[in-house]
Image (cartoon, rainbow, N blue to C red; front, side):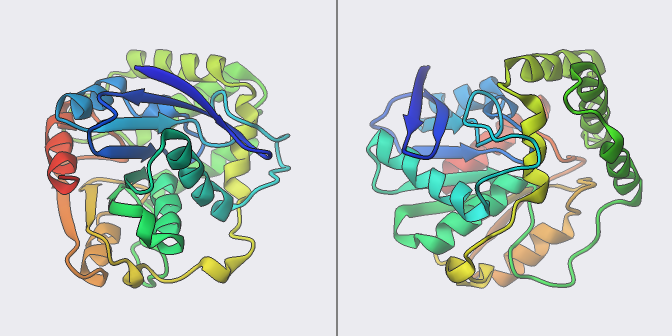
Amino acid sequence: MTLRIVSSEHVELHTQAFGDPTHPPVLLVMGMMASMLWWPQGLCEALARSGRYVIRYDQRDTGLSTNCPPGEPNYGMLDLAEDVFLIADAYGFDALHLVGMSMGGMVVQRAALAHPERVLSLCLVGTSPLGLDGLPPMDAAYAEHCETGESVNWSDPDAALDYVSRDVAAVASTRHPHDAAAAREFVRGDIARARNFASATNHFVLVDGDDTQFRHVRELKMPVLAIHGSSDPIFPIGHAEALVAAVNGAKLLRVEGGGHDLHPADWAAITEAIVAHTG
């Protein structure tokens, strides 16, 4: 494993790489309020053992990367998309494979639409396709849970721990057992590691800003793979099915019983699919 800080005039991003840098590069982009640790180290190592050079990183306002005061982000979604190529440049790659989960999937779609010549392939995990209408809504019970997040004091580590732990349970696989104690300890560590965990709530208010680069998911020309849990309460499986129907040649790995998570019992199938897609 190699740790590296990637920086520009405006941002500092903490990154970590696994494997041989001569192997095909795969950049992992995580979702809302989630540091790079939410890409499990075991999954990263499995991808590296399978012949991929894997990079994960803390997006702005998560982990050890640049953060803004809560409620005052000085960046938008397109800035997050450009961060992808800041990292690519720092590691010396003209083009690379992008894997994005949840909000990270939306970030990599924007990145691929803005600079298609720099994206070898796109893997979208538990996310929603940009520009498509008529997608199924969030699960009602999960939407009710989200509403309680508005009253959380995110600057209180214990309050944040309680809410995020409940959130992890609410999105967990329905096929495999959820280890609540292990999940809580993981969340505790993620909160403690962050420069300012409350800053991660800035992700809730991000906008595209200058939308001159924003186009439609149907314009994606590189190989696209969707990996999606059949029990995802945030983005029901219909989001992935709509994506595959809209993008020519796109494929879908349906994770039976999978939630909005990366359960260890599913890592082998996920690794196999990503390796095949990025070959």
